[in-house]
Length: 533
Image 1 (cartoon, one colour):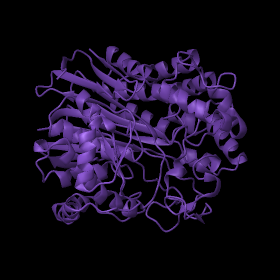
Image 2 (cartoon, rainbow, N blue to C red; image 1 turned 60 degrees about the vertical axis):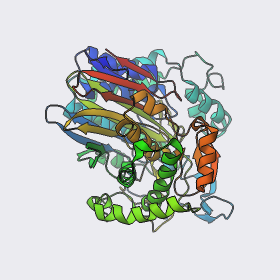
Image 3 (cartoon, helix red, strand yellow; image 1 turned 90 degrees about the vertical axis):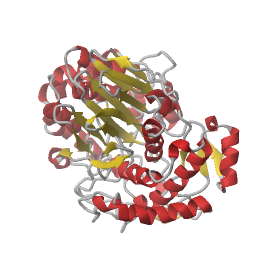
Image 4 (tube, rainbow, N blue to C red; image 1 turned 135 degrees about the vertical axis):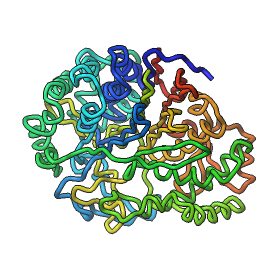
């Protein structure tokens, strides 16, 4: 266990600039919230494929040492006021995985896919309520990266290269901002975004209102409507993030917290409740993955059929993780363990591109923050004169009418972000999270078990072999599990597809029992950084 004594704290993020921005705040006397907000603003500049300050949204958990409690902030997107569940054409497509498609995928890319971006409002609220440093100081590292340049990592360079020709044809402003002479930047080459720097400076001076009201809001709304979208100035002005209670369960003597619906963590909590009835620590890797796969196949249909914005969908959260409902799900789990079945795809969605940041300070506070564009580069729409690339919040709804996650005016879509915090007897234990679309919930199960059952380091938990299914066989398993494990899973009755790099790069911090040392980890699948002192 690589536990280091804390003098200032620890910041873990997916890009070196991200971690460094957060750590600057700790060195300046800020707390874990200051560090997380600075890191998140910087991350919105340096990883434009994954998120941005016009990304559709995110969620954050904050453990407060003084009160020994955890609070959540929801800054998920909201659909425009004129959005409706029948706004997209649905065509039967027997050859498609889900049996249908939206022509041109206009629900995913383009102006109609854009909901109200929640990132700026959410980060400003977190800082105002729980931070200690001025907004201008906290945003400064992001401004500097936008103005003076940053080097995109390999994932972002790859995304830029893969989309270059389409951007030049369909999204010329995005091509102008993110390509160099019509091509993706090479390794080590830097990109600047001076227009985004000016927007960030306006936010630094005027707060959330500078983004959601006035000239910037009018520029955004006018361009999106002229391009065929439906976002309005009033949609922006009326948007509010909110502070709320996280969901919580007890697991092996730990209190495990996650962001509430429409976030994805409830599904992880349900899976944890299922596996708690087994001696997970005493299992072989193949047995553990077999258990995980069947727990996933039980819980994913529940999520995709019944879950949605709790303001629009009648759902009793307490019953979802209750002993009685867990017992019902356990019967399905036992049947699956004895004889794995093919399962089913309830709603297919291949998109994933998100960022996670974890911070912890010298006082014992912790933050777990995840935010996103949705899929890679979100809507792919950049508003001229702003440098703002927009997420595709509307694309996170099921485009079909009559479903829990169907589109509705002002409704917030079901999404997969699921940051987590765990405490032990009210004391900090771990903050962790991961990007990767629907792999998030499953990988958070794996990381949670690794930390709490197997008692490994944060780094080892993040590096553990992963698997994924969102309800159906074949299950995807990372080859790093070993050929013997893959073969054992087949002998259990699974159809197995080897798949490298399931999910994006996770990040986490584990705190020693006496609270004096931090163990920060960054995913070996990514290019992140741990900053600690």
